[in-house]
Length: 116
Image (cartoon, rainbow, N blue to C red; front, side, top):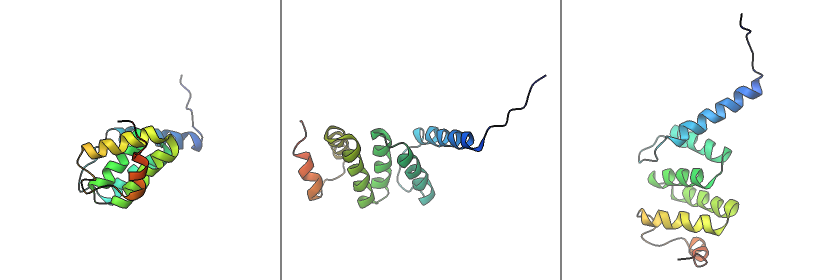
């Protein structure tokens, strides 16, 4: 009747990564996230470094008082995707109430080139 198909391990890894990405897309960035939750977000963000993924991970870090780590992730948005995505990310963070006491000097300098 039916044949049993055994997938090579490399395909299992691929499916695992897609599952992790699917879970990530439904994970809300909230306060009081565990180290394990943040680690899972980090793994997906490093595997799929698209601006929305990196932004959500940076937001989770910010909400969990990991300011320097969040800033490094935002810098990755600048490095990988350029100033427009970076500017949008920083401006969105500001709209959410972050950076009320100002930005670090290097981040502030990059924002000078943003369109208003």
